[in-house]
Image 1 (cartoon, rainbow, N blue to C red):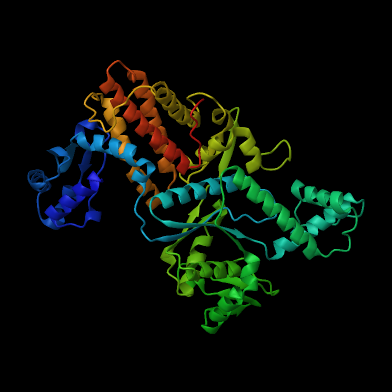
Image 2 (cartoon, helix red, strand yellow):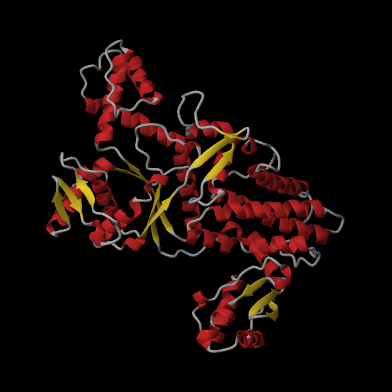
Length: 535
């Protein structure tokens, strides 16, 4: 049941408009109805009619069984007041079908969602955590909205950074054996490199000194990638596909792309380097594919990788990239157009920076490592639930602060605690009512408070929230919705008694609480947060 859609269909037929042209809003002021529309103002010129006349025409001719009253407001708004039946039907349907009631039909849109994809040369940090939580939550929401989603991690296991990794591990290995250490200037100096070298000594002593760099590179890749997978799994993030950059080299994809570009006059040589004509489309300058020393830039294998995604048949390709990748958008889209791929299918989301706040001050460095705070350390500080919620509570393109003190409080100041406490409170009430013979499929005749009706309206909107969040690629819409619903429940809890001597009144309220519980629990699950039954 989608009343908004029904009303839009009715209006579109009356005014001969496309349904997508019609918007319904939920007014901030309840006196302006359950839904309001500016359609008469928006299309009065096209229809050559006075807005008030159009609104009056809709009022007189719209036929919808859930609309109780229509009020026309100057200069041409139209406000819809609905019967309460639709709210009661929603609650009963939620109790009958559970979360299946909120599943949107399969839309046959295949989505590739790539996120994190950090170089396997170190440990994941705060920015990676934001991409991880965003990507995983968005995947859950897209699936619920009917999309066919593949979650993918691109392993940058080729190129010069991997050679530097192998060299760095070998030099640290030598150093721990008391030999001279010659770490390259562009080597990796993190404590995780020393830890890998120590593991090798503990297991093999000095028997690896004659091993070449490829050996150390392979060891380092395996250990660091396992660590990345473990850190992500600890915060509930797992993938369907792990694609190796090296495999793009090995299967000939890069050579095929390069041959196509050269054969079709899409490249040129300048100062010994090979350039791609990305200015043919959206880019502000042409980009280097092969440097004058013969080494491939990162851009070339990335073109081949994305071309492979198109060949795999995805309708939408979403990349979640770091804050330093703004300039990468146009060059990548240009490269896809050059290869005759529709760049409109490629959506690039840029995450903004994250700051940790403690005692009112920003802190950046780990006391244990002296480096940036890792995902694992943040998880230890605030826990998975707080980490997941705080990271998706704001739009990806806005900078955000995570206040450690608030995230660890067991009080209403902590939004995660506040939401989970609402769920636990409901569970407690339902447990107390388990021996009462509750009437199912009620008519909710005893429900008459504004707060109860507001909660029902909020629950009714949940399916639309999922759809909107998926369409806009914004998991924070769901996160904010849960907080608002929990806040409404806490107000309801303070204003009413749920278990009374009146069996009908008790049944009505218990049924409503069960529906609230289902929605809160499900919405939390979509963003990777648990719904405890006791707190």
